[in-house]
Image: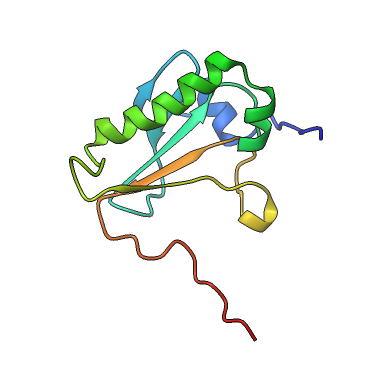
Length: 128
């Protein structure tokens, strides 16, 4: 499947320095920054610097170095925030892919939510 990457999306603009952000961590292949509309007391986004739309796109086309860097950055951000289960009550990671998942920005990003009880992940519809 071909992925159409929109280089005018907000995260591409952040990566180019056109839009400021509150950086939490930056590596060779990844950038983590505070969400401008936080949904939890701690809400950080982690994005790869490459032009990837979804996690499956990233997994299929990113280099081993990009994948390793990104996964390690997500874990390091959780540790840096002090929200890992050995330090606090934990965190939630979320990534959306496509319209059914309500992906708003067509650039892969993982949300890290923490700092409060987050409830169930989704409400499961009752079977009829």
